[in-house]
Image (cartoon, rainbow, N blue to C red):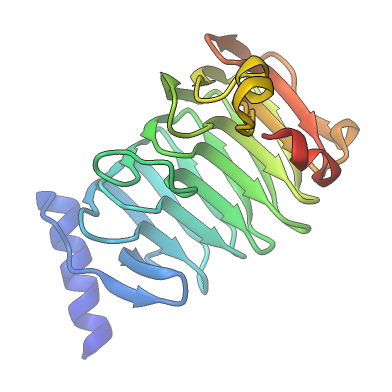
Length: 234
């Protein structure tokens, strides 16, 4: 009965664009949980996550996902395809320096295709693929940060901690941190964090196809860092 009611609620959301009740998961509350196919409007206002996968594979297409506090789409260990969709306004409202607010997040062995989407107005990151066993083909997306901001170091696309994949044909712009420059650090002792269009962190860069991306107005177009470099700020 509960599953039937959930399916009906999801169908109503997709058709009418109404705000759904937030369902508890192990990673926070979510507007949609383990729904094989998601399309249409997903207003996740009040939830931690817009669309959450942890036990079924999924397809998201022609969707608009917004309003979640921590993640627009969270794929935990499943195979999920996201195409021709918009993910926006993910984070605190107003945006803050809290280190969450990611448009599309793959972790825990998650795999899939992320193609031809528009990801914008995120707090910390546009698209993140994280952890050993996680891998994604990230192609032809438009990922747009907030522009120069002094409260958080955003990254457009991040592949980190042993993840692999392809990052090709994307347009990545507007990721720039102004809160603490190296000159400021010398004067005040602040930590000079930086932003990147494409951040490769603790990965084998040679194992990642990172060709044909276009960068505009990012503090660094592409940045390769290791955990040993954390003291210098990322």
